[in-house]
Length: 322
Image (cartoon, rainbow, N blue to C red; front, top):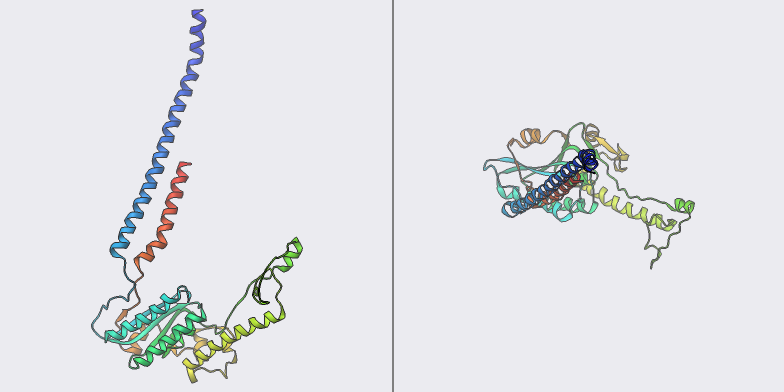
């Protein structure tokens, strides 16, 4: 009996030891992964707290940058990205930046450095009118626009308010038109056997709904809307450019087409070629540049990135845990 029991222990002991060792190692591995996960979580939380502290300590008010020179200079205001990303802030930025340049008493001219594909016609028109108002109030300080890669549609709407427009021969200029659109999926609905149940009070309240057929009357309404907005755009460009615009020689100038900078000069959409440096040096005769564009509010900058940082950190930690 003793020999049999002893023999059984000798046979089963190595397997038992291996199973026990495996369980111990697996548990230790799980403990390390859990510890790593929570360590990463607390790092992300700590980063969030630290960034929030920086926002409270150094957050700016979004005011124009402080004057960097007391000598005669060329003031620079940046106009970039889609027009209308934030209606009040974008128009306010242009207005406040230009006002700060005027108030300095040393700005010999204001150069709006433009690089935008366009956007909201309402924001563009508001900015156009604000620039013209300030120009009338400070007639001794010219306002120029220098287009970089692109100044099209709503961006050109705004640029037309300037005294002169300059661009690179390869810049994209123009696109004096209005666009609106959507989808008509009524045919697809018929194929898959889906019906739309849309309840409205007013025959045109659902106008533009992609799941409802458009009537001839609604198509006419859309055409009239676009024509009215286009007409405002055209009037603004004609007001700003005046006789420099060669509309008779180039009747498609208001068709919504785009031009290179070289073509735009021939059409009368720009006044010449140049960069912000050459315009400041050769036109304004004040080569020193002072940028009056408000520095981006640190709170806004961090708020956009903080979510991404936290999300990325948690995803990385979770990936390590699982």
